[in-house]
Image (cartoon, rainbow, N blue to C red):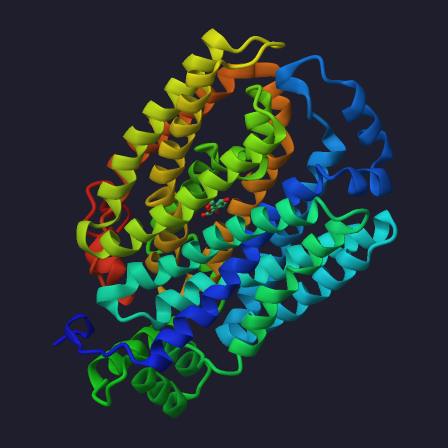
Length: 486
Ligand code: BGC
């Protein structure tokens, strides 16, 4: 019998472990959602970026270029650059100290970042705050998806891992609401926005004292008995011998490997490495963060008033959360690949339609007329919906479940850092792209969606239902292209 047939019960403890760890996703999501709003607040701009504030007042003649400013974009993107570097240190920590301790470190640094940012009186404090936030996100994003994948019973692995993404979307949504409320509180509303980031991190911190480390990490660090006990608690049953032996075997195999990074160039790790990196690049080139960071700005570009822009942004946020549940319920039934391909079609149609409407009806100075404006908002929602049940969650799930144990944390660090690099790139470049390419920006993203669909068809194996320690034999060695490596 193999571990895929093991019984497991979802006890309160098991469920608490999943949810508490998922708060790491809320930290990330809160960051994504809070930055755009804060950098648009006048009090914040006057204090730290007075020149930007001056420009914002005067340069309003072109719809597509209202907010194009490198400094402002740097405020948003700097965090992701810090996270990029941090994820490699986090991978070492996750291997040597365990997943749980690394999540604990993430929460502490993140709380320090929230404190420093909320108290910032000059640019140096603000930048250090961003760096601490970034380190927290790097450590959290490296460990939380891996933790969830390793503690999940195989038949629910996709759903449990997607709790991370669900909490990302909840974080983005809460952050938007917080910004909406604090933007009315002068002159220190922005301090509240940044300071509240400490709340999800505090839950994760407390949670780390409740949850157990993953059985795999415990066994790999020589704590066999604790590993077995943890497995029993996480499965809610006492009969776990078969699965335990599979973990022991995976650990034995992983021990032969001295340098994980060098081993990433070996056949068993090349396919997951290539796929993890590209999934993350593609995830960002769907254009999702153009919407997450800049939804209110985008809607203002289309000629909406500030309040209806914020309202539309709240709507897309809600659609994002709700559609993630779809992924949770179907990912272990229909599989990963079908979701990705279905979403490519839906995202492509939405982007092309948005681009065409804007190209035809939105000049540099006018605004969209009523019905068209509503259609565009609905199209943005259709796009977000498709992303939320596919490339969003699966960009994290697939890299966390496809590496063999010996290169799992190192390989996943590449996925995290690629995500951070391209998130920063989109954050940095989007407003400039919008200003130069105008409505054609949406065709630029559409072209990427075609490429990623083709990639998924030819290079991605279906990983649903395959135990994580059997990926090499059952996914890569069976795949028409990747099997040539072996
Ligand atoms: C992505 C983020 C994105 C979020 C939107 C995540 O999977 O990594 O960049 O903002 O989904 O929900």
